[in-house]
Image (tube, one colour):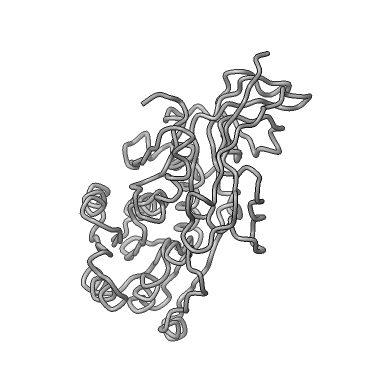
Length: 343
């Protein structure tokens, strides 16, 4: 068996505020030959996601923090190159949570490894539309939002991996959709998705301007707010919410790099008279929905009812740049790193 080495990104220091390239270190390591029950995988695609920023802080959370000097982790799709496990063979395509590296050896359980199902979509889609972002959109919208035909759904981060799918799923449920994103290219993308009204948050520099834009887009108010951003977007949603509105809180990327605690919405009192349900959620708490999600998503994709975009960086060297780009709004759809060498 040929000797295998891998380059991997390690956390060199904990970021304060916006991460910098100096917080990361690219190192080379040997990849062991698989022992009994282990599988050796060469990664082909890596995912970078906003939640990873929280794991770079040394604090208690729903997942342990990344360790200084150790390889970072994240979603990946790869190919088995060697196996001492009866259920995996060379050539199998798999997903795992051992990203930020070119290759690894692990037990399937240790890598949270799964074989990719043969559903006729590109392999990297299992890091996006058919993976964690897709299930996040599905679970948050349906389990917490509980959309009903004719309701109005407001989505922040609407051109991102999760938000773009929420917009399309809400349209499939017969809802009016208002999406917020930044810049003319993303406004055009939201139009392609069939969003009823698009708000360019870059043209609404404060909460007051965002409230005015949302009231113009949804003069009768909103029934569901799917939050990926927090900050002024949450303030605007609280102001425009209809009675008994539901707020699935997926993320608050506007505050992920704050060096001090962000103040809460000044109009949070609206929760009481409007009887608003606000619920944060984590995708891993909703794994029971995976069979239903895959059934619906496969059907929607085959019928041409769901589309998606990817923003792709090439090579392991570009992983940090891809991650930092998430906080600069550089991605439309899912941000991915391509390790295949294929353009």
